[in-house]
Every structure is written in structure tokens, then in C-alpha cells.
Amino acid sequence: MQEPHVADITFRTARRDDVPAVVAMLADDPLGARREGDPDDPRYLAAFDRIDADPYDELIVAEQGGEVVGTMQLTYLAGLSRLGAERCQIEAVRVHSSARGQGLGRRMIGWAVDRARERGCAMVQLTSDKTRTDAHRFYGSLGFAASHEGFKLQLS
Image 1: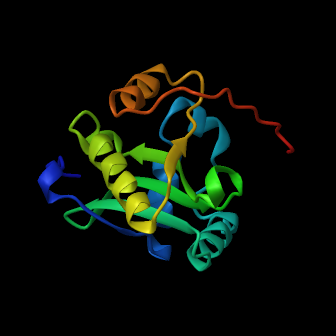
Image 2 (image 1 turned 90 degrees about the vertical axis):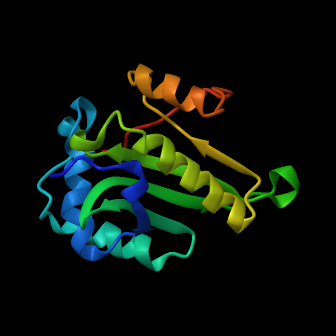
Image 3 (image 1 turned 180 degrees about the vertical axis):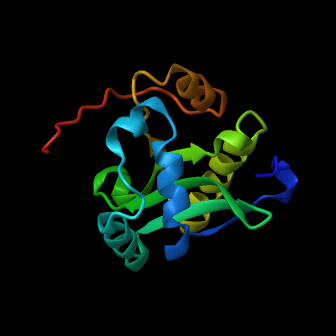
């Protein structure tokens, strides 16, 4: 895979045939390697179909030269707080190993924030595993504040 030049990156809604590349990026780190499975597992396509059909979910890919080099999911959440403001949740941000350290992550998050503004969201939020200290510094450098403590309960 060629090294991407940030200027050559385009963002688009993921297609079904992007799912294996997206799953490979999700699995390409110590946390993901423990949780992800075979990219051909039909559960990934079922999840993609559900995301793709929901107007409040967007699976986005960053593409360079026909190759998927980044991904993230944007979910738009309605709420009564803040005068009924919608917020954008950014999840599953991944950059292909060949494209890391070149500014693509910064460009992806900037694109997501702009997209949330276009939709009229009042805020953008994200979570990051406590072990991802480099990611925490990265998000802080983009203006995100670690304002809340998150909790999860694994069901399976």
C-alpha cells in the first residue's frame, strides 16, 4: 500500500465491500486483536447493513488511491438535555498502519467535527480506552476535554 499524502485523501460513506478493510483496521492493535474475528464473519455484514440503513449512523472511510486507509463511525444522538440538542458520537477511529503518523487522524477528526456542525449538532463526543494514552494526548491536542468518566458493562 502506498503511503498516503493527506492532500490525496477523500472521505466517503463506507460500502459493503469496504467491510473487510474496516474490520482489519479494527483488529490491528492490541485491544482489537483480542475482540475482533474473521472479517468474513456474517455478523460484520449484518452490523454494516444496520448502520447503513440508519440515518443517524454513518460509517465513514478515508480513501487514498482506491485503498481504505482510515475509518470511523459517527452516530447522531438525540437528547432532551441542552434544549434538545443533538450530539455526534465518534467511535472506532482507526488509521491503517501504513498511514499512521502522517496527519490523517487529525484530518479525520476535523472532517467529523465539520460534519457534525453541518448537521446542527451542539457537541461532539468520543470515548477512548484508558490504556490508549497516546490517543488521549491526540484528542486533547484537538481541543477535546476529558470531562467525564465513562463506564461499561460487558454483556457477553
